[in-house]
Amino acid sequence: MARTRKVTISTDVHGHTAGWSETRGAPPATPTSDPTAAAFFDVDNTMMQGASIYWFARGLAARKYFTTGDLARFAWQQAKFRLLATEHAGDMSQAKEAALAFVQGWRVDDVERLAEEIFDELMAPRIWAGTRRLAQRHLDAGERVWLVSAAPVEIGRVIAARLGLTGAIGTVAEVVDGAYTGRLVGDLMHGPAKAEAITQLAGVEGLDLDRCTAYSDSANDLPMLSVVGHPVAVNPDPALLRQARQRGWAVRDFRTGRRAVKIAVPSTAAAGLVAGAVTAGLALHRRRHRAG
Image (cartoon, rainbow, N blue to C red):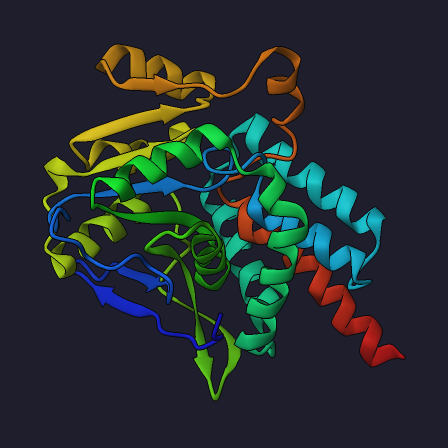
């Protein structure tokens, strides 16, 4: 896959910024394609067991970017965010600062190269077969399929390309001369930001949101699920399951028994997604490299 960064950035009338990137291998339009319908899939615990940024961090740890002890602390941080539903303003501020530390000075092509390698090694075996089939049904119906994640859009695009999907919506970091500056373009792709991004993309791509479908495991994504005509709860957390039952939404659960408990950690963690494993680990790596 060519590692060229082609991110579309859109800002709505309220000043909300969204970013998305199509994959080079996106399926071409066919006579049966529906240009007004699309499907949007959350990634962590919806398309994949666990958090994509955690598995990315595991891959970096295997490459000696930081220690397994660091990784254990980051995994606990993610679990804490999930279990305690820590989404206060201070947490989001720390997450944004951490995201800046993660990307600063790194070249885009290096991040995408590592993401490709780590997807093949650690993420591909953890893709939910059931969710993957749901995505394929939309593709077979001639609809576009987008991933939506708080992870950096470059990582989302790699996952989408590996799965043969249309593209990814994600957190966008500023790039100058092929390297990250350490500044974000807009905010983290989390909570209401996902709904805003989908709405903006729909305006640009000519989608009818009433004909679109969204999938997520987390009550954090209620805004995203509510903005489309066909919301689906996949492997839902208790709060989302309650909402889905109250609202009459479809529910798909690909977990079974004890296995469902085991995969809950490491899990998606709203603010902790970008703030966790990758961020501090790369900062430690940079400090150790300079010290050496």
